[in-house]
Amino acid sequence: MEKLDGDRRSGSRTLLAALFLGAVLAFVFLPSIARALPNATSRIGAVRRVIDTGETPDLVVVGNSVVMGGLDVEVLTAGSDAHQTGWNLSSQGQGLLESLFIVDQLDAGVETLVLPVEIRSIQDVEYTIPSSKVYAYELYGYDFSPVLGEAIRNVADQATQDVFFDSWIEKRLGARSAIRAGIDTAIVEFFTGTDVSEGDEDIYFPTPYENRLSVAGLEARLERNHVERVSLPTELPRPFVDLLKTYQSWGEEQDVEVVLLVLPEHPNQQSLSPDGYYDALEELFQAEADARGFELLFPAEMFSEPDYFVDHIHLHTSGAAELTNFVMSEIG
Image 1: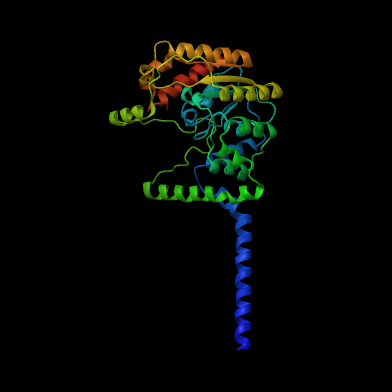
Image 2: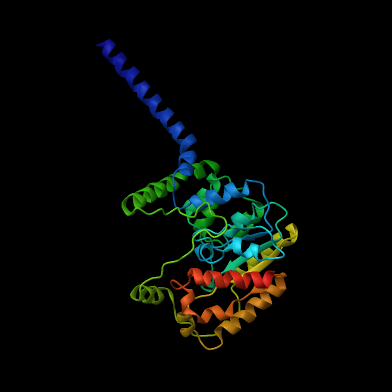
């Protein structure tokens, strides 16, 4: 009986030791597993690897999926006298606040930053970044500077602040959300035969949009995403202006010219806006750009051409060519 009790105690200790060792190994290797799996944040890792090459382009473009398929930086720099090299570091859902994560990592020597803005996004009173993306920036080795931290405090919602200011241990444990994203991505790719991470490594023109929605699909997308605007804009929201001030300080410190690019939207939205809406908005943007020392690019003619779009905001390759040529002609 004593021998049996001793064996049980020994077995329990072995089990506890194994569980403890497993927990330690999981804690240590969880970030590596998250980085290795293809997932919705893989583009963040690809951008980090480009920055880590030590190369310094003349021109950097940031922004969201509209920019991923809307600006061909290779064509832009090939036709430019002022900019010989450039990177398109945009990613899915990368708004004005999240772009600071990228800009914060750039080495001295960048001459121009193109900062795209979606008209609908400037109405945000608080900025949100999903927790999985904040954890991904941590896991892929991004540095969180005091400037970025201050911007998070000033304009981010409470949930984003809580995640951003998590402890190191909490951030490492947060990698489980990236792993779940990787598993979800693998399942989607297996059953659909598509590569959802296609374009992750492309730093010039990541995701050109060549296929259009059906007529019914486009109508449904426009109805779901476009809203009636009942009055002319009279001011830009304070959080948006505060973020522009942060970019202004960064540009002055790094000696970088900041170009504010207002992204076009499908003409259907124009039909839901009062007469003079875009003119009034351009005046507001111009006044703010002048106050910050930015150059403003407002491609007004693209707002009336439906064939440039594949949906409510994303540009067809023909629209991307038009926007690329417009930017190239304006910044040289």
